[in-house]
Image (cartoon, rainbow over all chains, first blue to last red; front, side, top):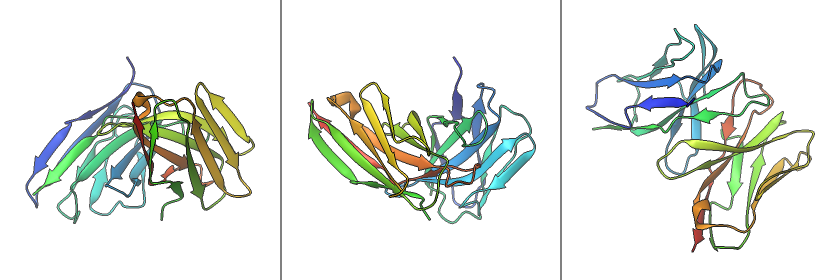
Length: 114
Length: 111
């Protein structure tokens, strides 16, 4: 079955440590996205990539980094510079950009930093 | 800032009733999409409506779009307990390269 896989489902880290969240898709989609979801705030865009080896900052990119070395993979690193990293992180992909192209989401990674 | 905003924030209805939720947005759009999210899971795409369309149906779902008022509504008819979830609208804000999500409506359908 085609889809998006995020791992792990739950992740715990100590403050000051970098952590990388995995996102893999086998849908052959060009575009991939990372969102952060906090209670009562909806989804906010962290980074997006429309093609391999290219990515752009979203609205809340500070303290995060990404890479897009392969079409299938778009890992997100939460660095120690991110002041409030505890959140639910969602990865998504689409065939092209948002024009007439729905998003397919993974089931998320819940990150807790103490 | 958020492009879309859903109303109401929470809605509780009896099974079999209809549920209506609204979305308002701020800038011109190419399309508007509705998504559903079960607790602790990813979002699932429900329906996409283009800016030149006024109404669209999919099963028990009916979506309307009024670009002059910058608003959309999602109607779920004959609701079921399994419809309990959060519902989000998303737009591209005319940018063609990003989606912007609202804060969601939490729907509870009581059996």
